[in-house]
Length: 212
Image (cartoon, rainbow, N blue to C red):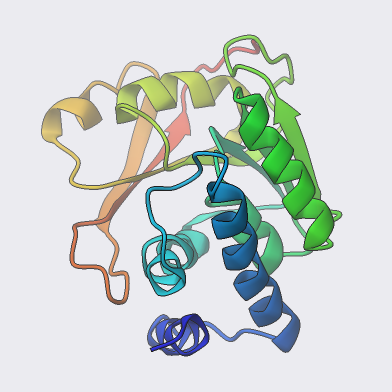
């Protein structure tokens, strides 16, 4: 099994049509991620096929829940899901925010190497970044709990926008904590090809959000 065949099989199961250019860029992203991972801690996964399964397909499976055209990946790390979304949606503007300088250097180089002019990389802490309520969707798969992420994301989400938390198995407790700041629109299980672990999306809208 190769990364190429695993990607082809996975997107077929997700009913996603890839152009030749998108396919080429996704596979190039896998190579870049693993190359930089030798010196920068971007992922614990070391094999190309596993990167396709655990990272690319995981991100592609939630793309339908994201609304553009302005999307913020909060705590982007290795560009997941931000760079994957940027490859798939050239008509969207993706902002990738991370406080780690080594990771944002990777994100900047990756966006150049992959020819993604729709990507803006921001090296800052979310708590101190002054950007206003500008985004149609704020998304993350790098957070300690859903409540903390939602509290942080709401100040960047426009009034009719969406907050999307990619998580494992959400509990009633951490979803219930969100009620004072956000309205939970949906908590749904996501099926990711070749991934046995539970994956869920928590989709929310901000309530009475204030600018940072």
